[in-house]
Length: 357
Length: 193
Image (cartoon, rainbow over all chains, first blue to last red; front, side, top):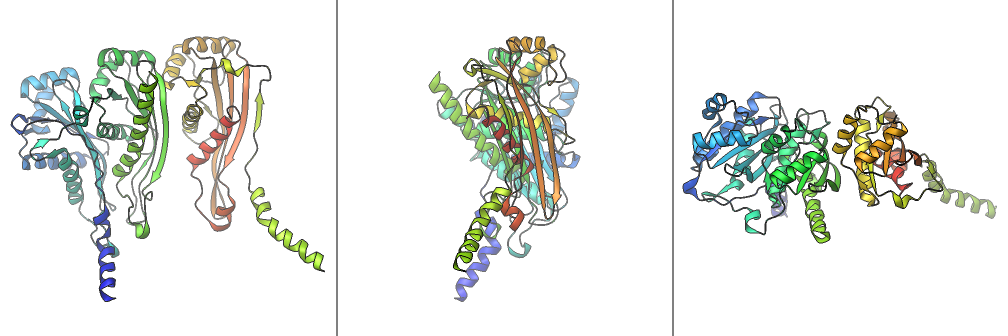
């Protein structure tokens, strides 16, 4: 009897740290360790806190150093960006990529954004990164993930993180460990399996109270799509193509622009949408949970037809079981769960489309 | 005496049903053109709904839900909203609710659509009612065919999140977004069964 009671107490104290599934969405790419050369571009800041980007860049570089990746960090690349007037914060276009490739000899660009950052309780850190092939500017790998101070919390508040640096390090390690394993970038499902139709994302519109919510969710959508094996065009290139028509779209696109994307970049599907709620947990209580709501639609690029339209609203309580197990505290993880459901619908809709064509 | 007891019991048995009926939503007002052949309408566009409330963004939000609901019915092909905006910009249109017959015809030609959905959000508000928050949404929509600019369908629908169980026991209520979706669903269901 005493032994069972002891076991139960241990289970409650350690519970959340056992059952927590890693939510980083990852796609892999083929490579060998001898040809690794990555230029990490300055991260986009979707949090409004300068410290968030500084911390993320430092931690990512430290991780890549520790696994032996030859990485040029954003501080080192900034003079080149300034000299050639390249706008490469969180994205890269064709001209910028060409100059950077010639000046640095890089094989890949590591591009990303910090999507959630909260120094006060509950601590939170979330980010997205993608590995873009410097030659064809297709995204070879992408991952999004986050961590909260409550993630490892057990009974009576034990295990709760009280240092944002520790929370951020956990998120970075989780996400990048999946991207980089055994001395190489993993093989992409898009390479291993028959290639799927090429996609691009038109940045999501944001109507929530959060700053740059649409941009943050667009990065996560990219990670979710790549996880399902859809090759995606670098968003900076999509933006460059549309800017030639003097157009910048958010949450929608017109037919002439779709035609250009189809003709010039061989895009088959376009995904866009609107973020309605993007609220992190507030207040120092385990009862405080994130809340997201997103509307997205899938367009057939050659015809401009809407193939699917989808809306999802969820809070961190979704999936919660007894004693708050299974609760999601990280905003980025919650949004990724939501977007992955949409990607499942995309798979079904695109399969139906192929059947009918 | 025995008869009185029977009546009492039957009244008690009917009480929950009466309470549930009493908590029902508001009805809809619907017009469907009696002579129009709806089979002709294959491709439609949703013109962004006008917001007549103080709830910022309600028009755009409910337009999105409406478009989503239309697609879910699989009755129409729906024009991408970005394309609708492009045509509206080219025609220098600001307010979607006040289109002339010529503008409707021209939009139909530009968008290759046989019908335009126009609408307005007449109410979108939350108010405290005892221990619960009641959200009410009212939507006025119409479908205009683009050959002659005739209204062929129109509906005014309302929805709220009042419920028997939430009023009595404080069980979780539908969120404002869910109420809006319920109202849209109700509206579309009067056109496509």
